[in-house]
Length: 186
Image 1: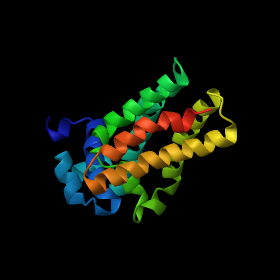
Image 2: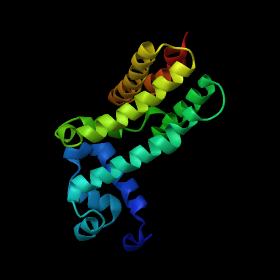
Image 3: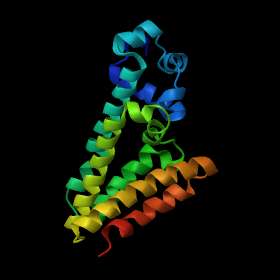
């Protein structure tokens, strides 16, 4: 599709790939332009605030994906375990079985952490709160549910880093299999 006709959502998806690979600090305008097929002036047309605005667009996309795809099953029908397994399947698909880099992890590193702290905190809190609510529904105390939810997110994020460092998705897959017992055990 010609760059001039590209919907903003597609531009954001292409930007996401760059931020996943290089993080905020390493994502140059040249890389962002190359990935989207847009010149700098066209990028600024879509994102008048420059690279920071591009990253905010990517964070908006992640938040929407998290709410609509990953966390939506947690509020659906079925047992807590089945709903959690549906969320984990969405994560597995998003991270391509553990072979894809973690965008959130890359935005927490370097100078972008301070720049996007409130957004990142909101994203992680939304995810943790949804997992904790599911654990409470499954009969876990509120305090334990919160701790388990934080541990689950920690394990997912840590497994993505380890999978990348080892160039082996096995740790990510193993964590996804273990999370239901971690989060929902009585």
